[in-house]
Length: 187
Image 1 (tube, rainbow, N blue to C red):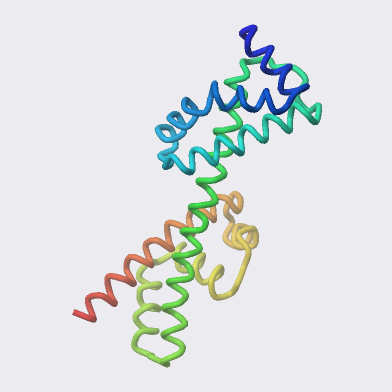
Image 2 (cartoon, rainbow, N blue to C red):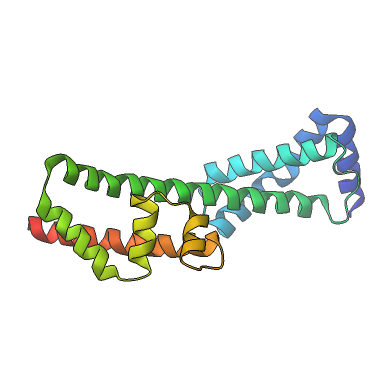
């Protein structure tokens, strides 16, 4: 670790304001550029990730959780940043998936609301067309309200993470097929 990083580390543990200002001056622009390139974020998200990472670094030092560095302060900060960026990306993708689920289930609600048996049959046929294991996974999750862990046990998957990945692939396929089918009918 460079001598200036050791001084910065000590400054963070004793005088938070000066230490935080130095962290921002030294690492902010490099961190944001790295985050934008490495994780395809926009600059605002990268700045938020930097802010969260600095707060985590500061907390780790001030709480005594981090008393000495075995790597450079920059490496430690960027490692926190990597984890923070991945969590943010994962959260955003979950929001997108949940938004898609709401849209798709909104289509099912519309179908139920208007009692359109033809559309229900089309969706059921598309679910059949997907075949196994997609039909079982989607039926168990969306209609029978099973948890990922329960589905994994019932269908003999290794764990719920494998089911979650498979469900996403199945859901995206069903969504694509549903949208194509309903758009063709409207032409």
